[in-house]
Image (cartoon, rainbow, N blue to C red; front, top):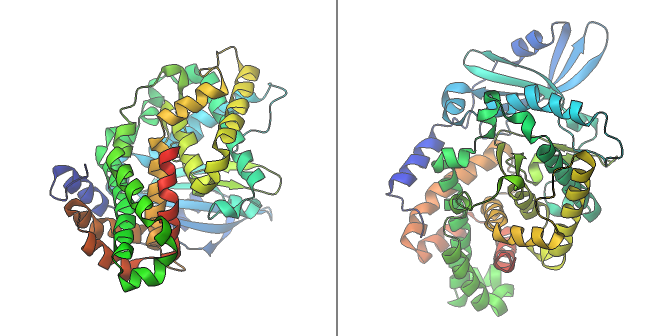
Length: 437
């Protein structure tokens, strides 16, 4: 049920991720900023954290000849190494240049709409010395904050984010005919389907997350002293947890890949954000919501975005009590916005039908939950940005052979040496709940 480390699929995505240079060279951001802003008189680097897996990212204070200044965010992506593989930046560029202006024009004369989702201001793009650069506003300087985890945002703010996403999907369905030309073909393509090794890598991490929890519970049930020291509080439910985790691994052996095979109808499809999780959105004190990092946009069932956001904005324990309510909040916002925009029929018809469709697509939020748990289990204190991503990638390569061999003892030894115990306990307690949704 899992990808063998000797298989062609594993070798393919191992090769794919090794091609990404996790330590990007120094890039010439000053030249790029001076070209995009011809009246610039001073450029000061204010944050040099290299946060992305695929790009070098920095923030700058740019001062102009008229005495004004602005804080900007810029990222440089190695075209040969990454963009040639799945053309990540091309999607984002098409969105900012061709899609966002259409959205603004479409809604400017429509009255009575609830507040709409926002996107960062886009200042420009250029290619220089084999790297493609984007320059956008630093929205953090304007009071927007990216939540670290669900508890970082109060519940009312998280419900607000769901409503903004519903508005975006309604707009995209109402505007669907606007994006029919060949210039939108690349933007609409799903790279998880076009590049199966990407989906397979995420499938592998889903399996590892579950197997890590199973190996840990097995150690606890056999009285391993380290497991007893750190996981004793889980003992009363250990047998049930172990059974449920095994069922999850058997039921969803390849959730990312299998989700692409689910049939859907065109009326439920729109131009998705594509990587719609808690770390790709920001909220300010005025209840504005910004979505960003649009490199995986594609045309598909809107529940993909909804499921991804659901999995990362709410914990499984929270969803246990309010999942039906969350479905209703999203659906009511989506259907009312769609009615205000056009005469296109509501593709679901009722909140109950929407919930049923969400359950059919539940592998989406199971997948995203498991991948986030996988990262959290092995994330060390103070680790962030590329260090976190690099740890995630290296953990996958170390754990994959043990998963393929069902090596419980080997996995447990590795867990002891590398795990974040609090996050592991959270994962063991929460992951089985996903089965019931």
